[in-house]
Length: 280
Image 1 (cartoon, rainbow, N blue to C red):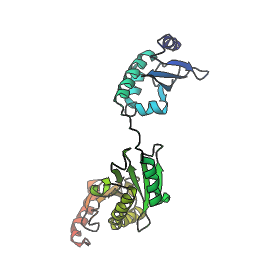
Image 2 (cartoon, helix red, strand yellow; image 1 turned 30 degrees about the horizontal axis):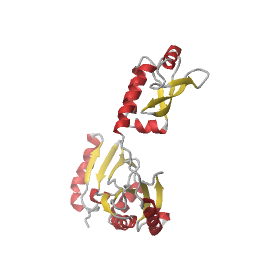
Image 3 (cartoon, rainbow, N blue to C red; image 1 turned 135 degrees about the vertical axis):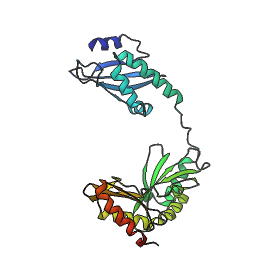
Image 4 (spheres, helix red, strand yellow; image 1 turned 180 degrees about the vertical axis):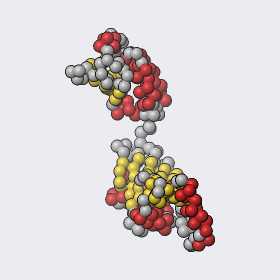
């Protein structure tokens, strides 16, 4: 392993990283790799001195993490397959150069971008601002429905805003209500989704009742867009139902899980009493 480190140090420092041990056991190495004039910091941790790169772990700076997002598994496999650091860093450098070439650089915000955004937040109330990213390009607003449930509205603002409409997304039961690309202001978004939330009060009340009084197996952490619940019935049997957001008390899709000898009587009871289902 020490030979591999010496091999790296002797390589061209402009193209490949310089590594230095960061612990007395020489199981952790820190360094940087230069790609397209940018220095990206990283760290490699080895399992032990005799295992080579097998089970080695690669850690990186925030920028490196962002660049390799979605490629982590493939890079980890390649790291463990390589016979030396130098072999791995050739592949890493090639990948980073490709990703940097493809990376889109966001344009600068328009002249009135920030002033318009501040004015709109003043208009709707800063108490509705739930979270935002450092560039203020993405933010979430919190709205309460008439039953007191809190909902998050996710807003993406193009840097050409307000000339370009907002993209707004919310976790609602029907796709038609989920995303809107035609909002011209945060005030419009708040007004639109405040009305949309009221459409689902009854179905959410039913789902809240199910969550509170049954053992729900799936989903583990239901979202407001989830209309399905799988409920434990005992004896390793369960019932999966999916409500209709438009007619929550109407006939719903259902499926029984479990040993056939145990779920067969349950299925017969459902069929026998199907006509007694309460409609609205």
